[in-house]
Length: 176
Image 1 (cartoon, rainbow, N blue to C red):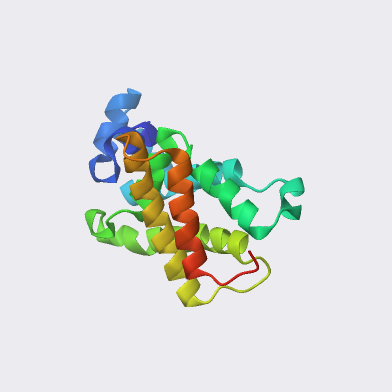
Image 2 (image 1 turned 60 degrees about the vertical axis):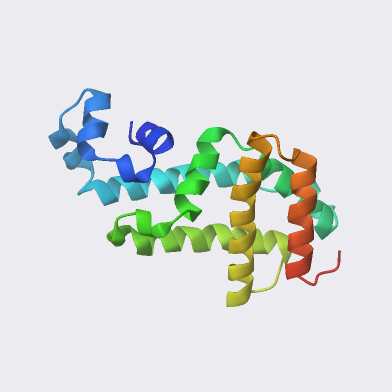
């Protein structure tokens, strides 16, 4: 139920009371499993992130592709994520100040993990520099914007991928 509230309402609307109401259970039962709302939220986000990352994992055969082709393939996959996973990404990479302050450290850690995985796709085998994390973060924000443009019909998925590839190529000097 917490996952459902998070997906439909966003982080700001998630509460123990709402989760208990939707699940038809008492708040005390939730507190037997989770110390507080933040603990519950962290578990839901970690579980969902693991699911999304599994859906985006690179198959063995894909490792033989040129880096540019691999990045392009991943961008196509991200742009076609289900709405539920898009909302998770919006919750993670949206305005952190909209979240409870005591979640910021955990959200930052999850962001770092996601960004590290993306950096490994773009620049495999190298330890990412802090600037690389910032660049990938900007690309992820551009993906969030691309989803909106695709939804409202301003651009096609292929146009979004081309824009995102141009952005990625301008940030990273790699053997494309």
